[in-house]
Image 1: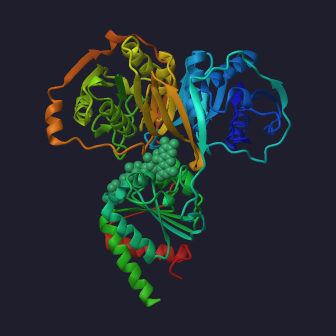
Image 2: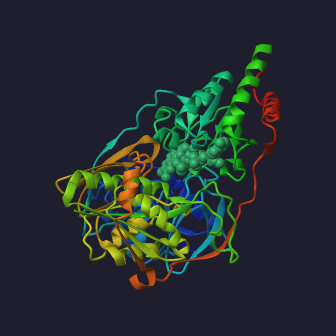
Length: 310
Length: 257
Ligand SMILES: Cc1cc2nc3c(=O)[nH]c(=O)nc-3n(C[C@H](O)[C@H](O)[C@H](O)COP(=O)(O)OP(=O)(O)OC[C@H]3O[C@@H](n4cnc5c(N)ncnc54)[C@H](O)[C@@H]3O)c2cc1C
């Protein structure tokens, strides 16, 4: 199988997801070339051919030009699969490439087995093995699903890539830097996080009390933050903070991949949830099947009693 | 201004799922159904744009699905859409993103929508393809993962959410499409008077076969539950559970020492 990897470059840097593409190609034993809209001074460590277009010329976010550059690379390399990260760059660009090539796209691939691409369905409760009916398949890879066994290495063979058409129907105006989180959860030993399963804003107090009783910090999943129940500085996940406390207690959190990515390295994970099949069970050391509203107040009482006796 | 918002009905993700007899999809029996979460933000933003423009604006909400989608469509009408367009299709959930985008293109192709909203992805498939494919097929600009939207003088300005808290600001001229990310706005709850008003709004139903004939680009080899990896599962009386949990924490972690 021949793979064309679409590397990611932003704001003068190679994004680490680029190496997950390389790891994927290695895992499935594909012969890989890479295409990137980047710059000649900052090239990825990669043993193979790199078709390199200049980001200063085409723009870092100019999907019209990027899709045509990838198409040009496809014409030159004739791959069976075009591989992108399932990231803000990848999921934005991949369908454009698929449409241009008349190819099928398979999104958020987590594995490759028996000649089929494996993807999660319904918040990872199920899996599906898919194949494309088209000559070329465009795939995007779930972040973190494929990791390099060792440090990336190699110096690519650079082949300049240019197309005549540079127009963009979308204009990138600026980047906005991440806001410095007022609360640094990455240093916390214990985090107790509230998810949508707590039911309503008034119940935040209960989770907050639990976090205090156990001597930890309050965390949150995204919907709780989007609804303004808890401040964004406490959000855990890909668009919040990445944490690895000694103890993480997830209260009413289903365990979507974007949440797991932010906390699965925690040393010990407790999930309190009514749904035994919630994907958080995949990473939980202990899954307590209970209703938050009933269980947490009792847990707080017992905890306080234990503390008093210590 | 003509506005279109495309929405999908999905199962409640807390449902107990079963795999269908052909091992290619989940069984659609005995599930609770709701509007795809991302689409709620899309509907809200479309309604806000409609309100901003006023009487000269016209907002159509479109879905593809079996008869059960009517409830969801009524909700979208009650939130403020002017008209519902239901493409009736009993196997809609099994259709791949290319088929769905092609069907919507067949509908939207010559209707001259100025702004189209979709969710960034659906909760069941999570493909994040339909919005972008639709825009590409219609040959209009599209920006994905939008967390902020504004419109003035024929120009849409959006904020895109990137990784690690970084955002980018992008601009494009209408006609254009945006795919909406969680947190873009606060979707409204339909009020009783608006639910009543929605009953009188135009509700068009067509069969998908009358709209276009499209062939799938993907085939499913199998669908299955992943092997359970997790740890200990505790259930039973809440008081006992709490004591069990504290014992485990005392033994396995530094807490309570
Ligand atoms: C690009 C992108 C980035 C994202 N970034 C993040 C991120 O950084 N962080 C993040 O968290 N999410 C993020 N998300 C959202 C993510 O996909 C999920 O939607 C989100 O994590 C779900 O939050 P939740 O688990 O609290 O809610 P839900 O998925 O709704 O889960 C609620 C859980 O509570 C349980 N429950 C319900 N009632 C009770 C009860 N009474 N007692 C006990 N349990 C109960 C349910 O069984 C369910 O498992 C992102 C999504 C995208 C597309």
